[in-house]
Each structure stands twice: as structure tokens, then as C-alpha cells.
Image (cartoon, rainbow, N blue to C red; front, side, top):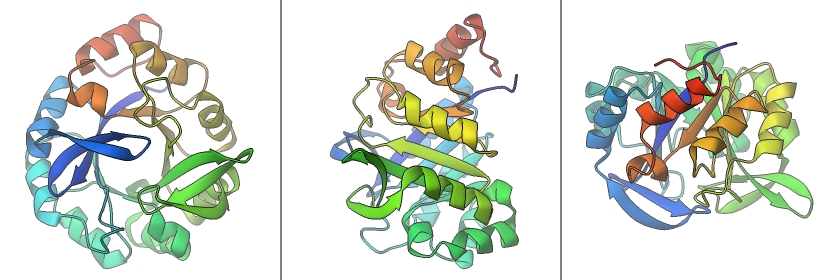
Length: 251
């Protein structure tokens, strides 16, 4: 059994870490550089940094802040927000990112996935899929979850895999910030039908939620924000619990 990964997420707005519920009602969650250093020290397997308003505000990700975060950590680091060109990715990799996450730009121009995979390798390309259940179907949303598209989540996930994405970051907007658990069924459906890793995101509230998404579903990693930022669950304790439950962890 492959080792499962625990990934804290820094949602960044105006240079600060924020957290909301269902992508709304954002509140301050602390300094991203300090949080990154703590998570790296505590044994997080990776770190994700998402500049959540970069696309809406039509600007690039905060490269200087990415540099500061990268200087404090020694774990794989994924950066997303406002990325739409090969040059954007080059700048972020130079600033210390290991991988990039694209969402709105991939939906707008799917060839971007092919271009980035060709230029930097699939292992560098994470496609984030923000999904909401609408009228009986899982629908892809863009622009920080503000805008529904005509894409259905499962076929889109298969397309991004074919185009060269190395990983999918699947966020259930219905579950985001609710602390009621991950979108188990959808995550499982994708994990079992794709050949690339799926990161489950949205809804973590207890240690059991992590166990459920790993045990029943083959999610390769689980991402969370507020429970780590506000110290409701510690990463070392979470990993010890999961290992005890029979889930392979890097301790």
C-alpha cells in the first residue's frame, strides 16, 4: 500500500491566509510564511498555496510571497492562482515551487495542460477541479468557485488526465469549510477510474474523516485548511492516529 499524504492548504488573499465556508465568508487565518514553517516542521507531506483571488482580480500569483514560503520549508510545494502561461510557471518554479495548480485557465484553454506537461513534465502539473452538485450532476466551477461551467466533473477529470496532468486536486464546494467530511462518493469514483493521484479537498473536520477518505476510497492524499490553521487537529497526532488505523503514513 502506498503512503498516503496529508497536505495543509494556504488559501491566500491580499498576502494573508484566509478560510471560509463553501468558498464564502473568508476570515483571517494567520501569516502564510509562519504557518508554512510550522507545517513543514510538524511533518506535513506537502504544502499547497492557492492565491484564491488572483484569477478574479486578473493578476499573477504573488511570486515574492512564494519565495518567502519556499525558503522556510523542505517539503514539496504546489502553487496555484492566476497561472495561464508557460512563463508564469517558469517564474513560480524559479521562486521555489515544485508543482503548479491550474483551474480556470485549464478550463478556458485545455491545451495549456498539454503545453505545461510537455515543458515541465506531468509531475509538475496539478489540475484543480472545484465541483458543486447541481441538478443531479457534479459541475465544474471556475474563478474561485464563483462561476459554473458546462463541464461535468468526471469527464473533465478524465480529459485532464489524457492531456498530461500528473495529479488532480478535487475540491467539493458543497463540503468546503463545513467540517462534515469529504465528498467520499465522488472522490472514490474518480480515484478508482483514473490512473493519476487524486487529492481530496473540502470538508475535513475530524480525524475519522481522513480515515474514511483513505480507507474506503483510494484517495492518494487529503488536503485541509482551517482544522490545521486553528489548531483543531495537529498533523503529528493525525498521522499517528491514521497509522494506528492501518493506513500507511510517513511519520
